[in-house]
Length: 81
Image (cartoon, rainbow, N blue to C red; front, side, top):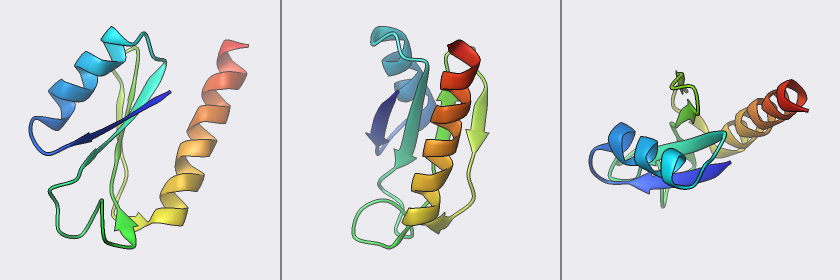
């Protein structure tokens, strides 16, 4: 699993990273947003899987985003192993 904090071309840049780093999933967020990313208590992410599936999260508290990421990572681990 990896992370991509982007200000431009979020999906394309994250998909390049998932391929280049041979990841099973990457969590991408647009850090140029005023209501998400740095210096705020909320975030909205896109979880991109190696098969190309993209899951968009709504704007939510960062602790909820963390739980979402952990849930998806566990589900992916259980599927792979």
